[in-house]
Image (cartoon, rainbow, N blue to C red; front, side):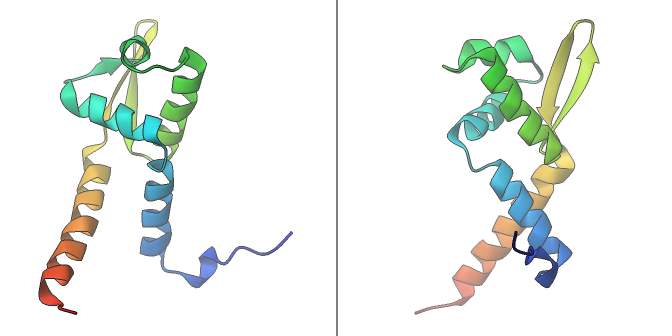
Length: 107
């Protein structure tokens, strides 16, 4: 098995890559957009919104949670998910930097 080259990049590069990898599935984008449209969410609500089985949605939620994109709190027998504002701010800052640099360059 080959060695990982992630050590060759900065912590910031690896963090951004992890976030974008977690967001690189259309179901996860749909989950993020759904969470943006509601104040809070229980997993069952997401299952009703997306054309996927509950175990599939649970796996996508796990990936988003592992990347710290969402947070989950146990409320009774359900888990209430919401977006992690700190992580969303990092994503926003990254794209703001790209947008700023694009405005400064001309080809």
